[in-house]
Image (cartoon, rainbow, N blue to C red):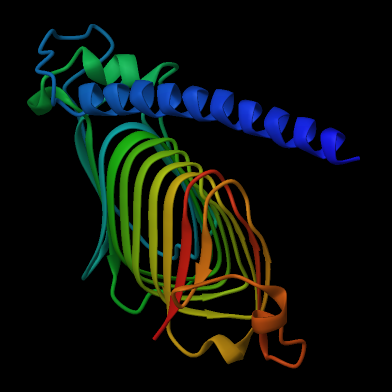
Length: 281
């Protein structure tokens, strides 16, 4: 029995090493692609796919937002009017309002290679300005290869699919939220989320803010940190550590310490390959 256990142990270690090598290669390739896409390697050749197309239009009566942005720089900001504006946009960029739903879309098949052919001044730029106090029914955001900044968003339902690049979101309020993180860095600050479902992807993910209701976190490849307002005793924390370390308030997760069936909120955590650290403040 002991010899069998030793064999199983060494097989697991070997598989872990193979997986680690694979993960490192994925991270390196992804990082090179991201850096190249956003101008860090100085590829300045022009692309026949990009145009000097500009867009600027104001909208009214929007309560649902559906944004599918393949490549470039994106900013969602607060302002006085609801306005969509951008430049260096691809030919197939469209904005269409049907009743109370606004759909913003482009379609670039290979966004990283597309961006790699452009200088920084040639890359698409899109800005969405939303009046302060706007409360959406639902917001669906899909990013390809992008450098994205979002400041202040309030919605009933939020869905975010991230590709590669960097995403910063702050002052986000949602009754229900799902995040599918891709590869890169995701920074979420001053969040007020109820019923959150997050898949962490490849790279670095940080979350700061309040969580309520039923929440699920699936660790990815890289470092994930959550700084949650409140106390650990406010949550029934169910954890399944992965290859990486899973800690709560600096202590390694154990069921007997952090399970609390009488708590008003729950946090279901599946650890990934990297570290997953949770602190309460």
